View 1 (cartoon, rainbow, N blue to C red):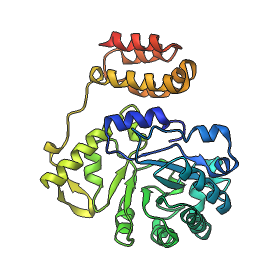
View 2 (view 1 turned 180 degrees about the vertical axis):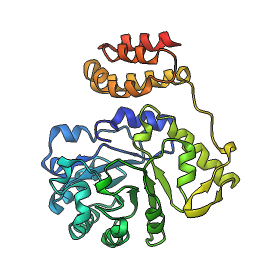
View 3 (view 1 turned 90 degrees about the horizontal axis):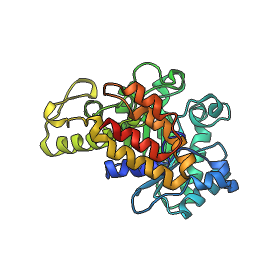
View 4 (view 1 turned 120 degrees about the horizontal axis):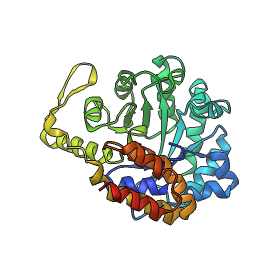
Length: 319
């Protein structure tokens, strides 16, 4: 979620769904250890809104992890998540992200360094494996033995990147083999997806599914709460769930979404200034503006605007 889950987006998500646990964009442990100004700025958060606040880091040096984790604890974060799942070529080529799956001893050493550096919880985000999911359980057991207090698993291998369907079966199997919370990730774009996939897991993580639809987090929270209260989902085959339609909230119309889109715009401008705030909002606006007649034309126009008030006027003209 690099370039997406900045403070303005995290705060928007928390306002939409307060029970959501938010993570930062993944940050370089080396840059944090060296005190890089730009990276340190990305640690800024609003403690009144964003807690519990989790900082996600990547890297390959145990010493730099130790130093970075101390910086993160000092700024008041509630937890640290180590990224061992990013498949981007420039990340993997430096033995970061998914590359650590092929180096389980180093991966465990990084977790051990982080855990021994701080008192706040340390978790790991990873994938099913490099080219097979058969390594998932032993890899994750090594991380837990090193001190990882929770695991989030994306249901694809490194070789899959983001192609094909996410495979949650190995994640369900992992949950039965470790003593820490296990969270599933991959192909969740609706409350129905979350209910169908959560199975025996402790939670679901949503990334790309929030693009243009942060409201999905509220819908998921409501649906999971109803399931817990009403017991209206029955275990089905292979760890999935049979979902009753009564659990699923009605999606919002575009007009109903406009006030929150404008709030996101205001947050972005307030935190980054008008020029940069509007520019960085374009990726979100491109995803937000859809689902109504003439959406394409409105979207193309908005993406040329440079002032927040112009964007506001254009969005309100749709209503």
